[in-house]
Image (cartoon, rainbow, N blue to C red; front, side, top):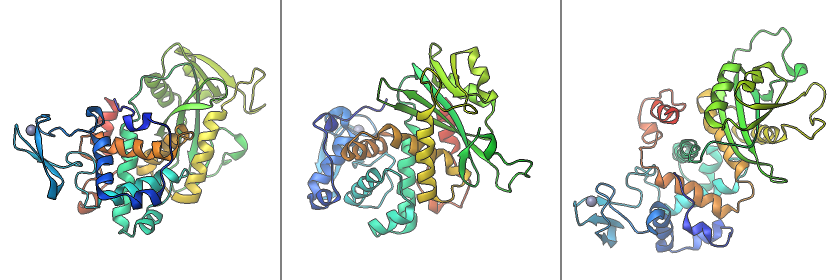
Length: 343
Ligand SMILES: [Zn+2]
């Protein structure tokens, strides 16, 4: 389970690019150590044998394990293992990503950092992949859960509004993808507090039931619109229907506004930054928007350290490691990642 870092338990403060630029190298390095070994108060342990007995090779900023002789760095074995970027550049990139609440494109990041496009692309996708990989690090959802879907092709639009549906049009040449959002409501005034997204081919009962049952406890209440694809959820859950053909808020205040809020942010990000999202990355983009919605009240230091912490505590190999050195292949959610998510 990904744990909130102890650095964040102190008073919430923002972090600025000017601050990070002015830090000395030791401060930057210590921040990485604190996040990497947050469960050990920032103290390093061997990436091979786990021993905490080591000596520090100051000139190389590496440690050698006294028990097994292995040499390791603060990024060894993490998703940032193979990066050639200076730690400060990575930290600056992360602060930029944390600040851009609607996301940004790899080419914008490239200009901010003065690096090659592929470097910016890879770093951003590693961050997105880390968010996707760690989205299950909490227990199943419970309480009131809003579920809704929207199609994306060529632009995001509501799936269920009859007036928006192409009438008798042939299918566009681009296959449509439906983004399913499952969003847990917080208490009064809190809005959505946790959001999971899935990319499915169509807004269909089978996929919807599968994903909702996989993530939501049985004693929960599902709030959805009147689309028949959500009808099967009544088998496992109490269900509240908001009839969107009549109104957007039911007589008891029931609504899917939190799901709508996700789609509104997704549209802003999609049109403003991403422009065209290939299906293979859609899962990453949708999950990034979900993360940004759920962390919308955090200060940017909290978000930046959380993002970096996820990249530094995932000890599996990043799916984007060596991406550009391989022949172009369909990445999407890599099979290794998909199977571990399904597990
Ligand atoms: Zn060791």
